[in-house]
Length: 93
Image 1 (spheres, rainbow, N blue to C red):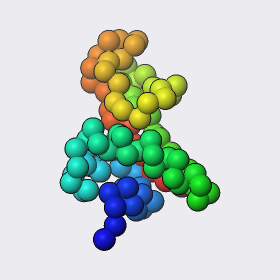
Image 2 (image 1 turned 30 degrees about the vertical axis):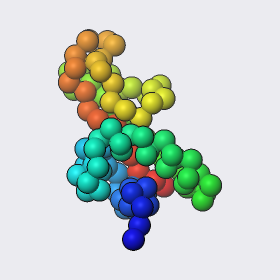
Image 3 (image 1 turned 180 degrees about the vertical axis):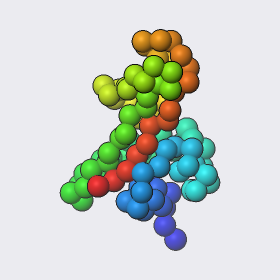
Image 4 (image 1 turned 60 degrees about the vertical axis):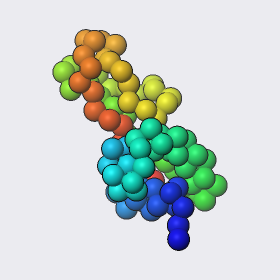
């Protein structure tokens, strides 16, 4: 039996996923996925690997949220104020 974090790590080592995909595959809420992601980043760094966060971007103007420190999805675009924003994607390399 593996823990939820071990299951998420295994998924992210295979391919990149967003929080919605992870929540469906591991059967937890999206909010819980974001809470686990911060801890997973610390865990994999001790093993010589890195949690890679592919940032969210605005679907209207193309703005990319490169400087965002939190793993969650932003509320709206600072440039065009649109709420049509992609979810950040995560992988382990």
